[in-house]
Length: 311
Image (cartoon, rainbow, N blue to C red):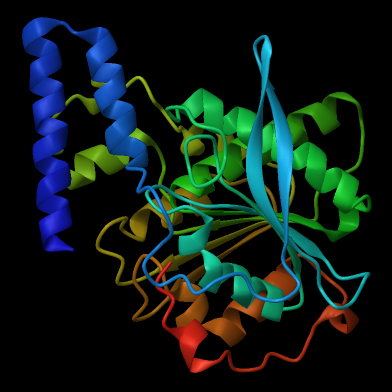
């Protein structure tokens, strides 16, 4: 972890000072996106293959005058009336690095639709950007609505950078629903291990005095959008997260105006809140979103092989 923090700090400083020195705006934007998304090609080293029941699918996303495709996993629950989660992952790892959390949500009793953004995994190639991942989220939502027509069964979930993607989607959907005087488009939103703005997290990894808000073109301004979210929001954060401090979730919670809950997990770091506090996490989901208890599955302990997953 310390080595990664030092690397991120050096890269951020290098990008900032190079941009100031040569005014290379296009190069700065490219370096910024590389640093933000840090895409690792290929499968995660701990990935052991798809569980039984997972269906792979392609989701079209229209961008300008061309149509590309997202690679997605659809894992329906045994109960056909179960609630369902639209899952957005963070930076670096593709879907193969997310299997533990996806499996845990499925074990909680949810169907799960999870996507890779363009540039990740088996989705069409391209350099991810803030605009492109928001586009991908909207395309995934359209498919999610087809798979789960009942809005009362839909939940939006985002981890880390994916939390900012989830907040943007939820805020957009709620604004559109409010303009039409329509009911809530989803039962709730889950934001795990996420941050307020990209500039804020960049400052926390470098130096607070750096004017990152002026340098960065990618904003991921969740703190500015969370007030537009009308659906209930569950914020989850590991109290021992050294990469994205838990104070960011506290700030998002304070700014949220809808029914909300903040679950801080003692001893958990950036990736393992769902594992450390599985019972509390599951109960928070069902109680805050007022999901029917009959939809729950009995939580059984995953196999030792699945417990080794790190994503």
